[in-house]
Image (cartoon, rainbow, N blue to C red):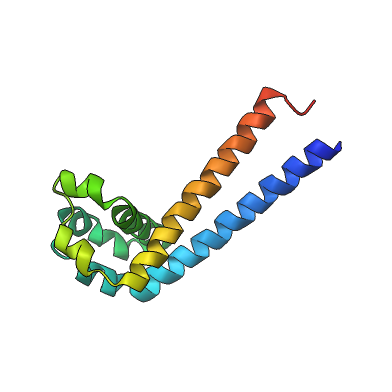
Length: 127
């Protein structure tokens, strides 16, 4: 393996490790803060529809945390469509909202990095 391939391997491995850490953080937030999140978003139809996922094991908790973090990161999109209550978003605890927003942006960045690495590898630019 040449230097470029080693760099790609290190970046890819680091990305996978970071995604595993992200999953652990999302599960921790989900299992410790779920009741608080659902209580603060009780007037939002999209969250009420997703709420049964909390009983779906780790996969359900990940989906629910991901959904809630998406609602909090891009509230205008969902408020325009009437699926999220604007008052619920305003009254959501600022510290938890910040954590979930950072969580959402970090997974967007990680998935973008992994997609970019995959695209570079498939194009054969490293030969």
